[in-house]
Length: 335
Image (cartoon, rainbow, N blue to C red; front, side):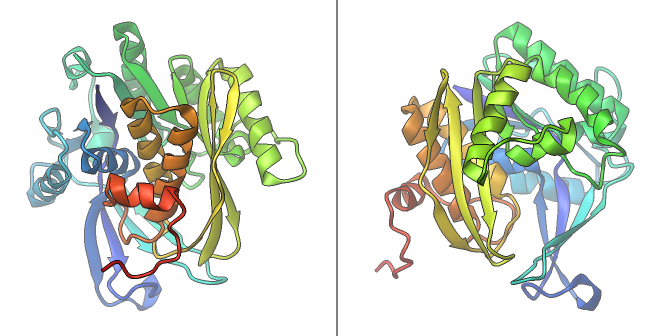
């Protein structure tokens, strides 16, 4: 079994001194990341066969992004070169009562300016089991929206399963109705849906019922399954204590049964890429043929552990994630 992910990898710039505000920062750490590439890197680190598909400029930044991808064991053969620039985003890590912030600078990026038939999807998807897509790529341009819908349709026709993370970035979409039109077409071809209860409210104006986040999540998943006809759904639950501490859990709906992980409380080093770690952990477990309870327990452990790792990529091994899953969360030094 093998995976493909499609999306934009960007230049990530973070103040060199951890949790420094951008307006007082003098230097930045450089990394290359993005939702779909983050999922690919986690899958690669865990030993899966995975390819990442995108378009990057023919310059040193494009070269560096590809080199970064390859360092995680990702196949980059389907990446095409051209266009004028790599998308960029700036991250300001929050702490305590101050939230984290993101500034995007990705207009006119190489991927946003792709043209018809630049990607040979039949060849790219040949002998693949899964393709992972997100709700971020379609907002980059009308062609990116068409391409995401197109690959989902081709994958379904070829018998390649589609995993779709219904990420919704408020700062990028003009209005939720624009996202709904595109998401509906992708969801028509989706086998496994990732998300959370909030995204249904944001995009579809559906307020989940329930007195607490867990009940609201179950209701949201039931609503999503009925509305979109998807029988496998994995949602995260995040209880914000502060920007420095969260309580985390996950729920997996599979074959009409709900499987819930334990709740893990984490102190946050880096909030970004955590949902991607959950998605990769769940896909890894499914790929391994684990039972559904083990799959969601593992995905949630990966989700929680990523909060302790700086950068978007989750570089923890399967063994390290298992240790968290088994309850080893005291943080004692391993000697």
